[in-house]
Length: 284
Image (cartoon, rainbow, N blue to C red; front, side, top):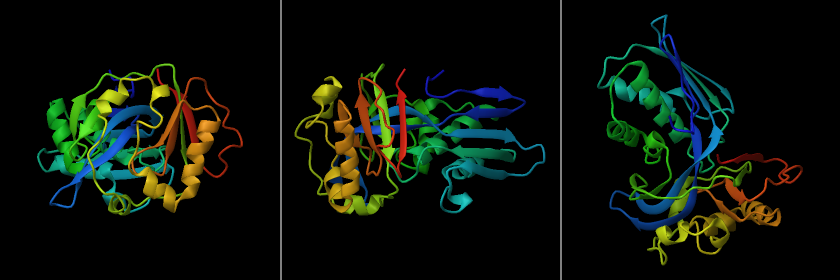
């Protein structure tokens, strides 16, 4: 069992805990003819969880309910609902009742929505005994979004292409304390990409990531930080404050607006990030 989620099955019901991810470095390396960009990044799972429950409906009627953080947009646009509809195109699935409790902030670069969609595929595969292997689930997940396939295997990877081509990478950060801070700012991903001029990495992420985190500062960079910090200096201020609190390394995740810090010892966050979502936890 993957250590980043828990499974409970009883009477055709399943409960999973979709986790988020952070980007350890992110380089925008090119732009494709279809308008999408190519990237290079290390995606690393972090134990900040949502809760996803699904049961085959005893009433024979599909339903989708949410709690926790308010989810913008129409329910039919949620990736959990899209995952169910996607699989019904190829399989005769009975109606299900779904409850999603959101704790991972949205518009943060943490991949919470992508994780929800991928975990929905894993639940459906189990409760309906679809016998989909990892590769097939990743293919379905890729149709939901470029970050989604990562959460099928849910292990650290070096991601290339549109973020959906994975190379296994050896990186483990047990014992480090992680902090994630997200201000009340939503970054438009398409706009963020429009502010970046793609370029090849001068130093390979593979070379940097094998070094300990205290060597990453100044080498492991996120291309989105410069334009985002120019437009939202309050996000840069969060990164600066995390370093002042003793972070070994800190960076924005994805296109933001969440910023994470890696600490050798758990910091005191009290009164430091008023008005922001702030979480800290330890990688086991």
